[in-house]
Length: 170
Image (cartoon, rainbow, N blue to C red):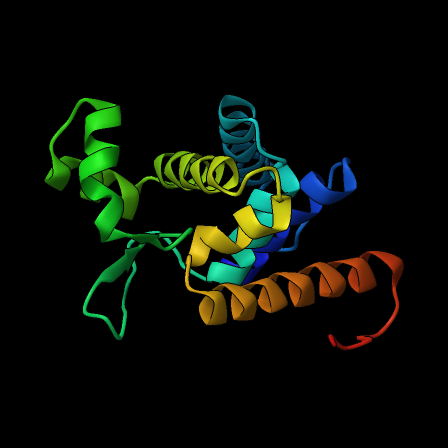
């Protein structure tokens, strides 16, 4: 179900048109797409990039993932808990309330992810892909690995949209 929901979110953003995903209602597709579009507009980031990052991150509502450094990633965009104080300040709430929203509210999670992406893009001195990599990490080895995952996801989506098979990633 999560993969179907992500496909429902990603394809309309990338292809610019409606997509019917099996097992996902039109209302769900619309709600997911609108959350992505609203966050993208608010933070001036491409909605397709948000959709690709959702797929790469692989998170879902109600799920956290532990990291090797002892931190936890939260929800669909896998927002690292180190961002909780800043997100809570932005939202005018407590860190526990922000964590709850990130964990259980798709739109809140996507909005926070878009804000983190915008911050990363702004810190990259005009280098868009450096900013996308910084969404994940400022450490070159992790950033570069993440950008390869992003590229692989974009190529998979392109191949699905064109009906061709996987071409691989350099």
